[in-house]
Image 1 (cartoon, rainbow, N blue to C red):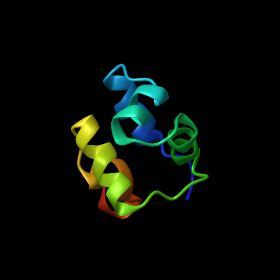
Image 2: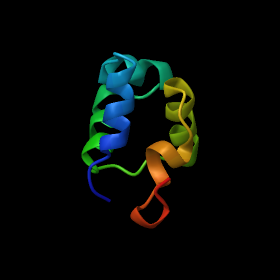
Image 3: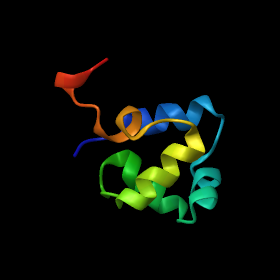
Image 4: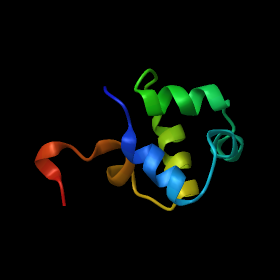
Length: 70
């Protein structure tokens, strides 16, 4: 899966800590950390909640691959 640098960058752009994002989407800070480190594959429901809280689309945070860069 690899590190999710897009999630980390989007969170940083909103000046939001892992803990703050975790509270918004009702998970632990450790869960957000694990997603960013590529150690945890979040459910679609959690992906959507994260994206909504960061004003991003699923493609922008989770599913954009090297072949589909816009």
